[in-house]
Amino acid sequence: QVQLMESGGGLVQPGGSLRLSCAASGTIFSSTTMGWYRQTTGNKRDLVATITGRGETRYASSVKGRFTISRDNAENTAYLQMDNLEPEDTAVYFCNADHPAFTRAYWGKGTLVNVSS
Image (cartoon, rainbow, N blue to C red; front, top):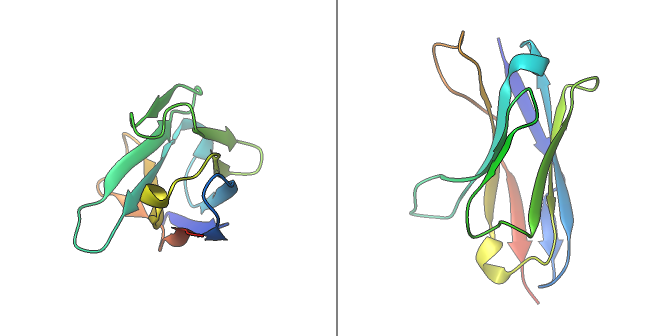
């Protein structure tokens, strides 16, 4: 059973930074694509960034140049470094794990990021 645990959310002022972490268990982490998605009330969950086991990354256009996704395969953890945060980045951020052997999507419970002055 794959389990994902996010941490690192909180309240930050516009222009500030936060780093989210996603600790994974129950999967061969090094071959699992990890992703960050975000969701605001009443809206669908949108892609923020993904990183493959080989380190290939993909970003939503709205965060490119401000956010950086990374992973530490030794620690089974994925990260999302968020810099120059904007109020529009306020959302619940979810970690996702994807692998060709999976028969379903795996998600963490989410962590709230609130960008406000």
